[in-house]
Length: 348
Image: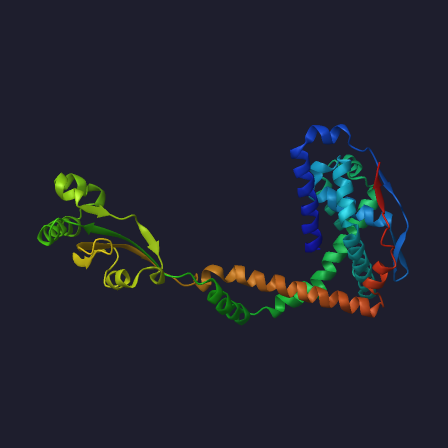
């Protein structure tokens, strides 16, 4: 059912794009009617499934998910054309589930069905059913089948999975997830470089800068106003970098590793790569963003849901396969009996 919903979204997404791209030309020549080439597509446990049955199921889903397109013939046709085979498979599975429900005598009341119809179509049921192309009786039967499907899935699949997913499974999943989603540690830093005409001049200016930023806690942006123009012109302040340790050069990394966040290094004499002259650098480590994965308590619910979704899909497949074997139904045989060129719907 999740795959079918994704397909439906794709169909409507394509259609929406066409509407927004060329609304005037599209609707001037919009077809008025969908013709149905009705025939029996499958028989399950003695119950025939026709093109009309598939269409009514699609109508129900289409109105529930995309009521804004209820009056668009073109959108409905595209939905029919791309979805009918998947819906046929779903109807075959529903017939098997109905047979299973009959064997266990699963009760469904008239009131349950009526309430669900009101939830779907609102208080103005008849008018909205007309938009969906359904009679009340058809909507009642389809809604009853949906309720039955949900109840059987809860009994045969959901309840089993929910009991089977243990806290230990979540912890083990977290260990694997954490390894794949761990983020590297990030160091945020800047470098002040002083290049003077002579080593003594450079060192003196560097010492002054260090005194201002470390002892007087002057912001880097305020240095220009505290140094004379000639001194400031010999200083360059790098951009702020935020890198993992492995991304920082070894010479820089060794110095930054000795600092605590929001502290400056002493002026360090280094040789300029460009001019080979001596440069005094002051390193500022602004902050360290710790690496690793988020703690377990922050993601445990999300990870549990991931396990449940995966186990639900697996258990549902097992359940449907058991039903197909029990009632001797082969989906591939059913689909292969339909001619490749068969077109259940046409637009005129």
